[in-house]
Image 1 (tube, rainbow, N blue to C red):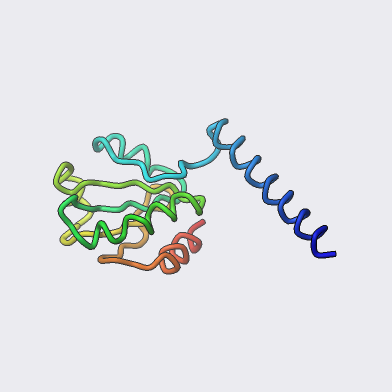
Image 2: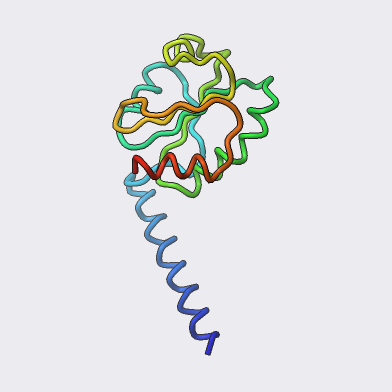
Length: 134
């Protein structure tokens, strides 16, 4: 009997994935991987609406590298957009958000910075933050 239940579960998952893919193809969903910010205008476009987690990082930063798989998982598994800002390339943006250490994560909701955390965070903490504003 569990075989029928398992196949129902599999079919349900397939339907969800199919809807997700269709939504992404039609532009109705966020990217499933982090988006690297190109400039201030790109940053403004990305953070202007919805829930956006911004990872201010540096290539030379060990903790930033440790956080990268978590940030990638959040991009893939949540409805939030995830943006990455290289603080060496985009110093004015880092200064604008008072980034004094990396990694610094800033959560935006509808264009407003609503949360800021510094240092490596676990996935559960970040998902909980995102869900508060989703």
